Image (cartoon, rainbow, N blue to C red; front, side):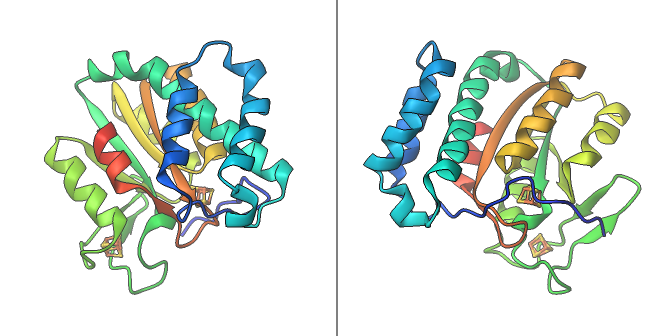
Length: 209
Ligand code: SF4
Ligand code: SF4
């Protein structure tokens, strides 16, 4: 078992926030001159969707989180065209989104890859649903204990496109690795972090694959 440090110094849970919030983030990501505006836009959205009340985050942490989400979406858009033309693809899932983090999860960890291999023990496990859907589409799937495994996997296999689910900072770091290797990436953010029992939108992932 690997241990990873938690990139954000705060925990968040956006799973109860209105879905219009995410539509709004997607819309904003299309706009030009994002960098200067992202801070102000984040402040506005935080007020509009009452993010502090809904999540208990203080305003500066909420701004960091939203800026990351907006930037992630903008990068997805930039890379989308290149990504859709890739053939050899993989999906990276975070181990923290498994339904269980203890022995009730029947996934076996293979340190040679390194990845967990899902045993499909729980039909309502998001990782299980993601693995099945992605494999059906021809993806190789990895359930990673941390972003540090990514360079090893990318060097061993010559993937052209990667879909990655993770929290914002993990995605930023992995994005840099993909960029250096010329691999096209698409990111799906965790909407609840904390390194255990985390959540992502399976629907968003299915649309991305
Ligand atoms: S379905 Fe797979 S990932 Fe989810 S708890 Fe079971 S073995 Fe673990
Ligand atoms: S992806 Fe999960 S385990 Fe990794 S740092 Fe983010 S919340 Fe923690």
